[in-house]
Amino acid sequence: MNDELQALLDACVDAVVIIDHLGVISTFNQAACSMFGYPAAEIIGRNVSVLMPEPDRTGHDQYIARYLDTSVPHVIGIGRDVTARRRDGSEFPASLAIGRIGGTGPPRFVGFLHDLSGRRAQEEQRRAAQEAVREARERLTHVARLSTMGEMTTGLAHEINQPLTAIAMYAQAAERFAANPRPDLEEIVGALRQISAQALRAGEIIKRLRALVRYQGAHEELLDLNSVVRELAVLAESDARANDVRLVIELSADLPRVLADSVQLQQVMLNLVRNAIDAILTDGGERRVILRTSMTGTGVEMSVSDQGPGLDPTIRDRLFEAFATTKPQGTGLGLAISRSIIENHGGHLAWRPNEPRGSCFYFRLPAVNGDASL
Amino acid sequence: MKSPAATVFIVDDDEAVRSSLRLLIRSVGLQAQAFAAAREFLDSYDARHPGCLVLDVRMPGMSGLELQQELNQRGATIPVVFITGHGDVPMAVEAMQQGAFDFLQKPFRDQDLLDRVQKAMARDAESRAAIEARDSASRAWRR
Image (tube, rainbow over all chains, first blue to last red; front, top):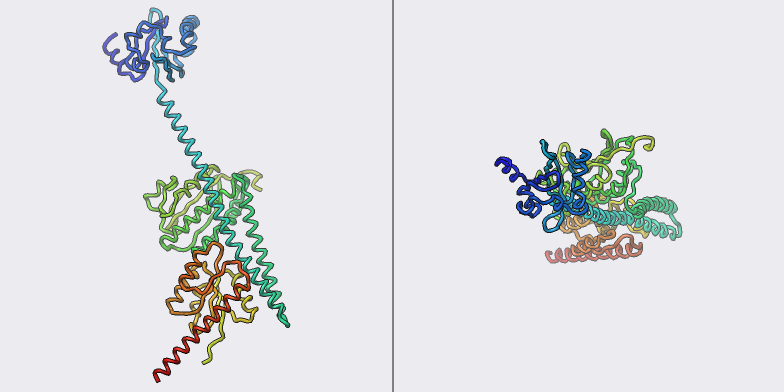
């Protein structure tokens, strides 16, 4: 063998093994030595089958014989992933390519082996990491949903207290007016009318509360995004009012429906509205948050925009990463969870600057086509 | 000049709560005046007007607590009865520390509210009488 060829073989990162038509090893490069743990002097002259575990170990001589007989290649020129065996008996995955060396004498074969064990381990690790992230995200989503539901429930409990308080006072006032020897019927009838109006108001709130409690986990159905936004606005109203922020709703008529879980969508919207309110509170921009729906090319868009300070460039790239936050009390989970919810719906959540200032967070969901959209 | 009749001032942003409160107070023969916002009340309030204030803690714009602070700064002595929602107890505690007369959690019994209002009115009458007595004493002294 000339020097150039020898240098080529030794520089090769993959194992190179040359055998004759009987399977006897004639060349074994340095990479092969370190991959298999054999010194070249020890392995040259031995049958290549020692580099394989069973059943190939026993079958290899016949593989060669069959090829020489039929000329039908099974590995030659095709390559395949195989299991190889080191000198110490341990095994590792490798990808094998074989070429036939031409010439007049009996055929010889050159094999290239690439050790896959590192790659396999990496893939294994990456899969495990992805799995762990997915599980963590699911747990977070669950926790966030519970706490959002807790907050929504508290908000509704607060809302329901108002009509109840009013009802009690109207009734008590009416009773006192009635106890008068010459009762003022007009006052009494007025109070009774108010009582029934407030009872209906309380009933509406309870209806929403029940819809929340009934929620048993992801439940996708054909939804009108506009009505989801309207319901959400009721839930977010007390939060907005307490911060002196007005919710402005601009809904696009005749939106196609989307297949989604309404509670999860409301969780996302509530999160975006909260963020918008927080942004306004930090710099006293115009005190209103706009909730808007519109059609896009292939779907529908829902956006929440504010005229707060907008986004600091340093946070823009990490906006949707878990634990990235600019708020002193923030967990940095809101947007990360929101994005995973929207992506689970086949949609996309993103940010763009708002005109003339502030932020606009929006998500797009694919529309459901056909007659199902009623 | 004869001072105006003692009035229960009500400030609550919820229309139903506000009007039912006013009706309840009127049903026991007291004069009541209601406002939808703290600022609205402040704009028309004359400290010489006797009475008490029934005030919602949580309101948009100026909150009940902020209104109380504003009144304190102006040196107004009007007794304040706070009404709070569920979970607003920390706010109520703060209000009491700032010198509120009392507080009630929604929903409450009519009699509980009326008792507190009556007591607050009595307190206001007492403090006005005390101020009047002191003022006339100092007037007598100067003579």
